[in-house]
Image (cartoon, rainbow, N blue to C red):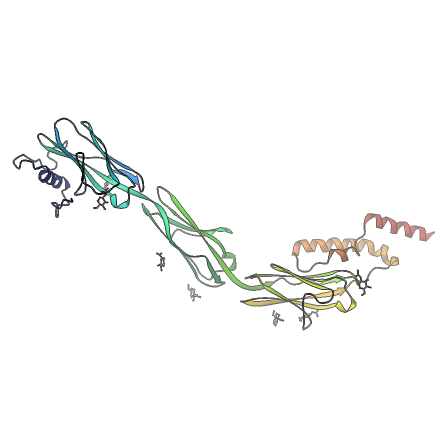
Length: 378
Ligand SMILES: *[C@@H]1O[C@H](CO)[C@@H](O)[C@H](O)[C@H]1NC(C)=O
Ligand SMILES: *[C@@H]1O[C@H](CO)[C@@H](O)[C@H](O)[C@H]1NC(C)=O
Ligand SMILES: *[C@@H]1O[C@H](CO)[C@@H](O)[C@H](O)[C@H]1NC(C)=O
Ligand SMILES: *[C@@H]1O[C@H](CO)[C@@H](O)[C@H](O)[C@H]1NC(C)=O
Ligand SMILES: *[C@@H]1O[C@H](CO)[C@@H](O)[C@H](O)[C@H]1NC(C)=O
Ligand SMILES: *[C@@H]1O[C@H](CO)[C@@H](O)[C@H](O)[C@H]1NC(C)=O
Ligand SMILES: *[C@@H]1O[C@H](CO)[C@@H](O)[C@H](O)[C@H]1NC(C)=O
């Protein structure tokens, strides 16, 4: 089916097509064949057709009177010769063939269809051709992307994103969570030397060309050893609830261990509960006894290391009634200051709410105490 008459004449398509047609339609060899450029109306170049991959391409050329033969060619292959389909490609079909026009269509256009198409028309006198360049565009598609990655802090990280598309897509890397404008790359490769824990997050690769955009994300996890917030000592009145808090930053999340001096404390010990919730471990004494006062340490461990801090549980002496009035004002102030501290420094170790009630006086309570004092004076 394919014509191979044009082995070495790529540079002169039109002459070639005319030659082909001669063979095809068995033109009398004596007929004058005008060479390219001799007459502009005989060999026309249409404007380039730009089409997206997957779409349907319509190729149309005008006919006119006295047409004896006509054909559409893809490079040197005849697609249609008049109503006869020469192409074996099922995507190619005839749309219109009449005195005015000769239109064929190619469905589901692909990159390989790109190139020169020629409409050849033989009139009773001479052949003429119309050629058109078909340019196929392909939306960008990311074809090779780094997998989600888990690395240790300090590693050199390389993320890669390769994309296809036509025109060639532009690639941009950036971190989207946490967002950080300073960390981006307009390159297929994003290199992050000595990665820190603050560079962990979701990275996005965008491949864009004139026609579309493709976007993919990669999650980067950065492991680091625990770092522990300095514990703050906790004062609790005898018989009250006491809570020691320990907070550690770590990836993967830390396991916590509690010690009283050198003795390990486990959850379920008499009157004690240990609760771990993510970055925070909470040691609760339901009813603080004399023996509970002392020096505790919290150790946070993950596979990369450990950190520790110590917290002292100390006794607050319950105020007696004679000292109440003096202490009242100052303890209220203290409490306010304490709360402010909490707010500023975050949860290092805070006094439990229950024990707080021993130092905070409700307005009604204050009124009673003042009245009591006044009565006693008489
Ligand atoms: C048409 O496409 C051809 C081949 O890609 C190119 O050489 C030519 O410059 C294009 N012409 C126009 C007008 O874009
Ligand atoms: C056009 O020719 C090229 C090269 O031979 C081929 O790959 C492509 O499938 C052809 N397209 C059509 C629609 O015939
Ligand atoms: C993706 O890129 C990597 C690195 O260049 C290469 O080893 C791998 O074979 C590529 N995978 C695919 C599917 O192209
Ligand atoms: C990371 O890269 C630096 C140079 O950029 C090199 O000196 C260092 O050894 C690399 N570290 C690792 C863990 O490969
Ligand atoms: C706390 O313990 C003491 C001594 O064991 C006991 O007398 C007291 O009733 C307990 N308080 C609570 C609220 O359980
Ligand atoms: C508590 O114990 C740790 C070590 O176990 C020690 O470094 C720290 O000084 C102690 N704190 C007090 C107040 O004794
Ligand atoms: C606590 O940390 C110090 C250094 O900060 C270290 O010398 C010590 O061995 C640690 N203690 C425990 C029980 O891990």
